[in-house]
Image (cartoon, rainbow, N blue to C red; front, side, top):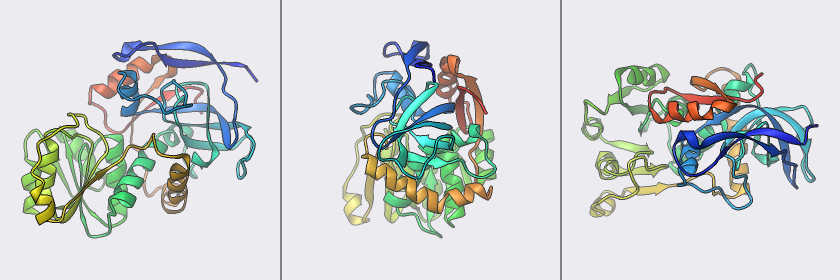
Length: 329
């Protein structure tokens, strides 16, 4: 097996053009890890934040971007059971996905769902881990509740709409164009709100308020989200595209018994991520294998054009997931 590999690194903090192809040593599997020969790598907002110098990788993680990938297991480290050389998997990564090979904890790997190609499978880990842990574990969404997701046409949004709809919630989504709103409706959103034309806060208040809101916008949306919640409602924050600061009247948290919470996935412990993986394998992977839910695909770029993929993502014109082709398949 080759000792070197192609990869894309961040040469310095900056825009998409700081992503450059390089040659790096191939990683090896430590205790509890596997090495995956990467076929496809998912492109996500945290990659862009890392590229901009705003989201440093955890200690001991690869400095290369890339938090999810699909491919074939080619090396198994000590202490690993349940996987074999040659298994086709998709995996949540601590980093390093923009490369021909990547090492990751074996417990963060999941089998490629039946009937699904490696390209689509590369889109599953980051978004499904994030949505499952924040909407269903942290947010406690149950059937019959009103659920609002901002950025409904994003990778997170398209995943959240499908899962919430499947588990019986009434789904509302915001998006920035009629095309994106229609995509949300096609996936199961009862109402899609064009935030350039309508006030999501008023729409939700007219419905009785949201029981749960999943937000990656932050900034001025924080106070509006709280107003859009029903009594005893929950706001889960997973990103801050418009900033992490806001002026909020916290009296309504007490008088209306609201809950504000949030999380980021990457800094969580390996054990916490392994537990999410097990939940997904039991509750969600059968739905993917049965083709009852699927990742929404936007576009693909070759590994050497990660710059183009990031430019596409930051244009906000995409609907669904963007992937990098590393070896294909």
